Each structure stands twice: as structure tokens, then as C-alpha cells.
Length: 385
Image (cartoon, rainbow, N blue to C red; front, top):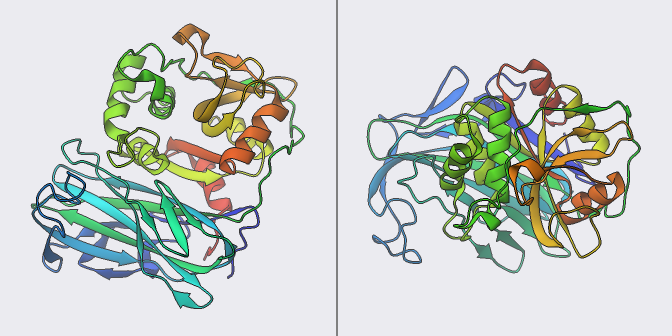
């Protein structure tokens, strides 16, 4: 099958889905109940490629020795992909971590694999993105971007699992999201249902934290979504501060790495993926089944009526529902207080800013036993059996 990312397309592999890890090549890993684990009997022993503290003043991995195994996906044929983002759901006990790489084929020639991040839920491990640029592509924190006029005709996902002891990571699923170059800026969908539904998502402001809260929009949204699913403490403060620790990317120097945010949410026992939706009509399907979303957009002065701040070059909000007119009901963490977080914005403004800025980038987070959500996330996936 050749997937066409004229809008966006997805490849989802994982336990309980049509596409499992059975089609992947494994070295030093073993499958158990559909998940992947490190096989300590066959995993390779390696040493960090950089000396202790020798990678921009930090460690690339752990600055020492470790065991590592690798999984390589089948070749994923595509037609003209220009951007790629990846998300993973994994358990990483202390002393374990994951690195995800993408290998791109241009004009039937494979490029060298590039890293999309080194991550662990263990806060003692310093998770980080891996900047890269050559004449063909660059990795912009969490997005692989092909340079004009290059377009990928195939990709492969490479996952490396690591451990410094006897514990093993448990990889549950991986999603690759691909996009073409089309921008939908200014596009407005008609409301599919025009039926009011607003989900009871907790209200959390990022602005109530004086020690950096003004840049905590993404972990604050994660905290709201975790709270909606009854995970992570009874109040905003506990959930926000835990998320801030769990999503930090020292290379990026911030908290907005999309892949790290969904990986953190998944580490709390949920499923979490990065997708790029075509319209708010797509988002309505998730609200219909009781799943709130987090979406990414930017705006300039006067472009977002009722926004709590004048402008932003990149912001994450929670889409909690729609009113009877089809306008999005938003939990905006940039509000000055928790009580002021809930807002209703104009549909055409939000949709145009979201599609134009981030190609409809969305955090989709739900419990593993939510059958409708699992069905909906798989509907968009290519390479189904």
C-alpha cells in the first residue's frame, strides 16, 4: 500500500491493533503479549558514544555502559511526505529509556537514520531531542522536515530500547504521522452535528505559577487531560508540576516537545498519540465519544477574538467541546486564573490558526479500554491487515 499524505496519514503499530510488531525486525528484543521488551540474553552491550558530560554539557544517553536492543519497522511506502512526527507509548522503569529514529528514502535512495528523541519517564534521566540538519532535511525538535523540493517516497521507524540493569522498558505502541506541504490556513469546516457537547475537563491555568508558568501551556494541557481521566492527583498544581518535570527537553530548553508530552501522558497508563487532523469536523468525532483533545496553534494581534493574551507564536489549548453553533469550547491555560480558563472562540478563527500553524497537530489521549477511541484512532492508520 502507498499512503498519500496530501493531508495527513498515519502508521500505527501496537498491541491490540491490526498492525502489530510481528512484522518488525527484532535484534536484542523479544515480544510478549504484543509488547516489546529488552532480551537481556541477546541485547548488545554498548557504551555512550560521548564521554560523561560530553554532549553539549550533558550525556547523550547515560555517559556509561548499557544494554540495547533494536526494532525496525517494515518499509512504509508513501507518496510525497514532507513532514513527519512520531509518538510512542512505553513504560520505562528507572534505568531504562527509548530512542526513536526515522530513516527516509528519497528518490529510491535511503538516507542515514535521524533521531527523533531520547526519552524516559525516569526524571533522573535527562530526556532530550537531537537537532540535525543536512542538505535534504532537518529535525526541528519534534518534527522531521524535508527541504524543498525533496519529498519522501518511503520511511522506516527504528526503535532502540535501553537498560542499565535487569529492568526492561515495555514498548506498547508507536505511531508515525506524515504530512504533505499543503497548508489549510483560512479553511473552515461546517459543523458536522451542531449539537452542543462540552466535556467536564478540569480548568487549569499555567499563569498561576510564577516560576516559569508562562511557558507551561503544553504540560498544563496534559494535566487537564489527565485530570479528566481521573489520573495524577486531585488538584491542578500537583498534576501540572509533575507534568512539567516529565516533559522537559533540555536540548530544546522547554516543555513543548510534542512527542515528549504524549509519551509522558502514556506513561500514566493511558494511550496517547500525535495526529494531524484535517478540520474541526474531525475533532467533533472525538468529542462525540467523550474524548477531549489538545490542539496547537499560533496567532497574531487581533487574530483570535477573546484570547487571554495578545499573540503567541505557538500555544497548546484543550478542546473541551462545541456549543450549539459549532464554535469550539476551549480550556485556554493562558488565562490569568483557573476560573477564567473556559472560553468559546470563533470556529473559523481557531480552525484557520490550527491548520495553518501546525497542520492540525493534536494530542489524542484516552484509556486503553475505550473501545470507540481505539477504533477511531485505527481508522486513519494505513497498512491494515
